Amino acid sequence: MVHDTGPPDRHIGGVSGKRGGRPIEEETPTMSNQVLTILRDAVDATCVLTDPDVMTGYVRDWTGRFVGRTAAVVRPANTAQVAAVVQACAQHEVALVPQGGNTGLAGGGVPTRGEILLSLRGLSDILQVDVAAGQATVGAGVPVGVLREAASAAGLGYGVDLASRDSATVGGTVATNAGGLRVLRYGDTRAQLLGVEAVLGDGSVVSHLAGLARDNTGYHLPSLLAGSEGTLGVVTAVRVRLTPATRARAVGLIGLASVPDAVAAASLLRNGLPGLAAAELMLPPGIDLVMRACRLSPPLRGTHAAYLLVEVTGDAPGEDGAGGNGPLDILADAVAGLPGVADASLADDRPGREALWAYRERHTESINTCGTPVKMDVTVTPDALPSFVEAVPAAVRAVAPEASTWLFGHVAEGNVHVNVTGAAGVGERVEDTVFRLVAERGGSISTEHGIGTAKRRWLPLNRSPAEIAAFRRIKQALDPAGILNPNVLLPAL
Ligand SMILES: Cc1cc2nc3c(=O)[nH]c(=O)nc-3n(C[C@H](O)[C@H](O)[C@H](O)COP(=O)(O)OP(=O)(O)OC[C@H]3O[C@@H](n4cnc5c(N)ncnc54)[C@H](O)[C@@H]3O)c2cc1C
Image (cartoon, rainbow, N blue to C red; front, top):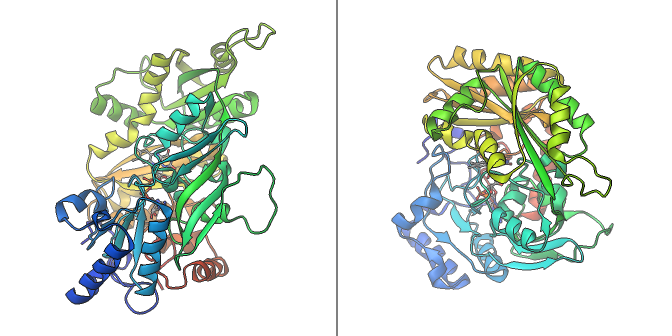
């Protein structure tokens, strides 16, 4: 059963028959028991969970919008066990859904149609932090925050950071090609990848983890698996590049006279400040909500039409050997030269920086206090962004008069997170309306959360029939039995 406002074809059926893997719940009880026996044989029997109470946390997504069910949660401890599970499922044509930290926001990591749930959290070893190479190899189940800590302990950093860092796994961020808060500086997860180990749909293991800085020997499987949302392979280990440690950073929260001013300011800062690491847009309703939900004081004097949260990294004052300015002075000078600035608060000490970041990072949890959200993350070009931000709330109101619309995002990349609460029963119409506004402006319906189950029917707004046909051929090649997450990403046939 799926609690969602969308149409049935998004969440029910579509995987029966020989191709596409069978959901275990549609089997006869005898067949279910047979599959459970096969799974128990493939891994240690204690790794196969069937207690409904224990499975609850695995079948419900972070937003509460997607709730599925499964006959079993399988928790392998190593790559060999993952391979054994996938091979058994392929032989018996049983569909499975890989899951990492279950923080995904597109409904792709829960078994909405009774698939077996394959949890990768047990692959949680930091296998190597290679300081000389500036790289790390980690198991797919390692949380992003743990990788970041391991890099930091070695005097290095990891370029991907997101508010879900304590739960989101490295494997999950590869599968969704997660972006996050510092894409502007370091790129998305795909940009960090030097190698991947994965189990393909037939149970075979592909592994290329040497981390050679240059390696032009054929197809780049890490790039293909990044963003494949568990449809092409189960990621079991990852080799990533690490970044130099950040010596000093400053954060500014800027109140501006208008959204176009905020977009223009983000462009000016990106073009003028080599150390700009983040630029996040927020609007008054979101700031007010975060203050109420998290009991925070107003960040600035008065209310402003738009807010820009920026972070600049660099050397500490004088550390460059030439007596140069630190990030705080650089940021203060830059903010002083921006048009439309009404007020700003800057900090370079850790508590001060974290206090300013809280207004942005706590948007997601604050929105959840208003009820189950319809979540969209879209990209439009910078010149289209102000008109898009203006158009969305009115367009949503036209199909969901009771709804509230919350907008924020990674403005330097043209990203807007569109969250709508109070749209029970009309979620699909809301999504359709917003995605069409995006498509009219030549934008993308998924910046970083992926397509999942939530958006698969709208993939044709962004991808041509020829591209989708090519996607299907790639899936057929790597997952011939069609058992890997068969109900995400590609539109139902
Ligand atoms: C508070 C909050 C803030 C967030 N901020 C951001 C943000 O700034 N940027 C951003 O991009 N995302 C963000 N997210 C979304 C989410 O954290 C990311 O999508 C993340 O990459 C999901 O990782 P996960 O381990 O939780 O994956 P899951 O949710 O478990 O799975 C997500 C998808 O990946 C697949 N998958 C998971 N693990 C594997 C594997 N090992 N092999 C193959 N497929 C796999 C699943 O089948 C599913 O399709 C946020 C979420 C929350 C709750």
